[in-house]
Length: 82
Image (tube, rainbow, N blue to C red; front, side, top):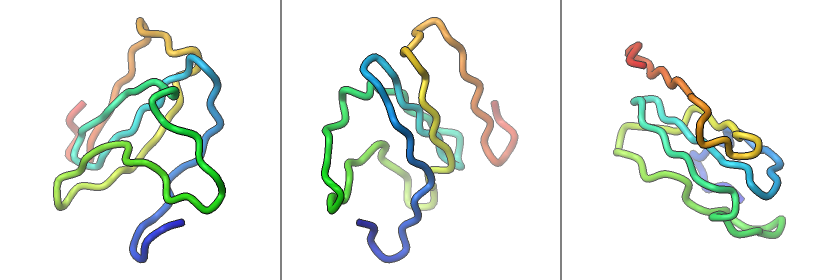
């Protein structure tokens, strides 16, 4: 379920060992193991993936298959900071 004004930005199937990366418009990002998120049924509202500042929003989500800790990910925000 979504509250009024919320927007779904992505859905991905994950497997054991994968990691999820969420990024925001203001250039913040978080990376966590898929096992940190509990499984839910169809009517659930989900879990909080990242805490946001009042004017920020999540703009992207990607799954790092296999959770390669040596992999590099470049994030770029709306102001061009990488």
